[in-house]
Amino acid sequence: DPATDSRLALTGGEIVGLARVWEASTEEVRLYARTHPQAIGCGVGTALLAFCERRARELSRAGRRELTTTSWAADDRAPDLLAARDLSPVRHFLKMRIAASAIPPRGALPTGIRVTPFAGGTVAEDALYRAWRSAFAGHWGRPDQGAKAFWEERRNPERDVFPFDPALWFVVSRHGEV
Image 1 (cartoon, one colour):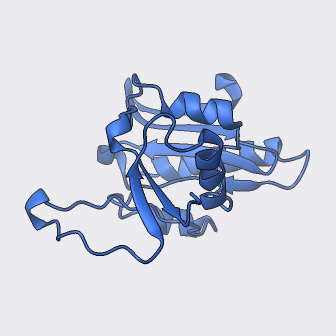
Image 2 (cartoon, helix red, strand yellow):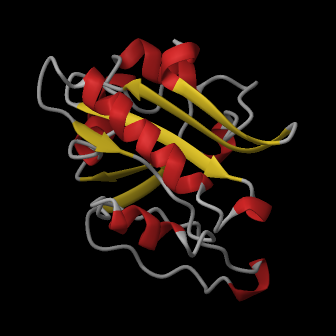
Image 3 (tube, rainbow, N blue to C red):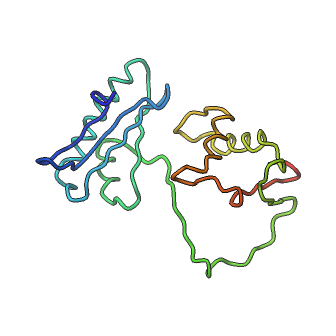
């Protein structure tokens, strides 16, 4: 409900911050809060986090839940702000880059490891889905919505982020197992 779960921070008629809180699962309440770079250091982030914490407590009355959020690596002030509110790092996501000219030559794979292009029919979809579930078993975030939703999302060529391109999918197996 935008009226109870969202806030905008305004200076005059300008938006300088925003926040949203939602129930991500029965175990998690998630918040998203951002402050315009020109408003950093003015208390906007602190005020938005205070709103999010109050709303998260209201949403958590039915049971114990964790409050989670994200910050960007480029936002060097966020860690201190979040730590001051007793939020602590759980996981880091890194975006790694290398110039194409700096890519080292392909090394030898360990014995029994095989990398093949993903193409319809080359590997069972349920085996790929099981491998994904296993790899992200301890990952908080979106609850598992099932194999059908998993494949619909990943095969959508219209996605803004990571649109489906089967030429970029590879399957790694060891002794025939994904």
